[in-house]
Image (cartoon, rainbow, N blue to C red; front, side, top):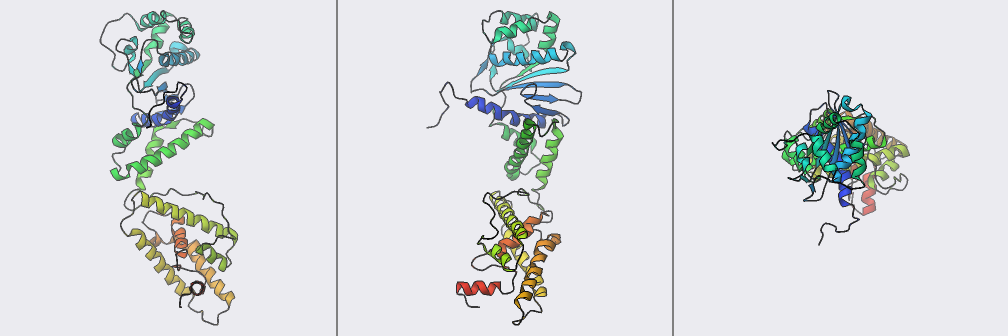
Length: 405
């Protein structure tokens, strides 16, 4: 039976906290105005910037179920330590800063921290600085005491100014709740049966963007409108006249072996003397088209019989061009001429077919590897390839298999 770890050194929640940051940032940029932008792991867990130049330092706390924030919770005071440093650095009351604490836990009903909630209790109190001072006077914590010392260096007016910038958002969504929130609230224009696939692609792009930020490959903050644009682009790919293209520039895990690959479509290309570089490109087209089809099938994006009809269209168009190229060949034709004819036929499929709109599986699917790879898949059919390049290749295969011509 699997359950929560009781190991005091287990880092499960801490690990979730790191993963939570990008997923939570994605949610907030969808919730807030599109001109909001974000950086990760700069001044705080997340730094948000709005169009007015206000910078929000956001501390995220992904806690175990039932966790409660009390007066001296280190989650709050460690964030205060960070915020105090930035507040002093940026000119104190002149700083264009605000401080948000997002936690999956709840603030205790008896804690003064409830006055920092979005909807604080309607009760009278002298000032936040006095409430904080009373709380800090009770601590002997080695972690909190230095924070209290730093806080007490501020004047009463600056203490109130600093604390007035703090907002606590408790009972926040847990990491596994965020995808459903995004799909239910911010993907309503997307057909319900496509939302899972589009969210997976959106988060994949988002996580790559976050990696670019963390590694310094990207320096500038990410704006909310970038997410909107990407979501719209992904959604367009799932329209009835389109299909998602996800394998552009993807590479197979196995090393490409042009000279020894035994598959029919590769053997055929060697048979007509296609160069190694072009055969390598053919193997890539085959791989990308095959994997792309597999994804379409897994996500139920194809109509019943659509792929079969598409392959029939490819074979029909190929056979028409084959008849033109092979028209003047006969039994006396030399092998040199046969090879040249095969190369001409393959050149049409490799170079020219991508410009023929009628060979697209759907009108807006223009990625060349879908067509080129489709020909290679048909050239790899067993027991007999449905298309071929060398005029006599099919006869050779039949003889090899013992099939009568």
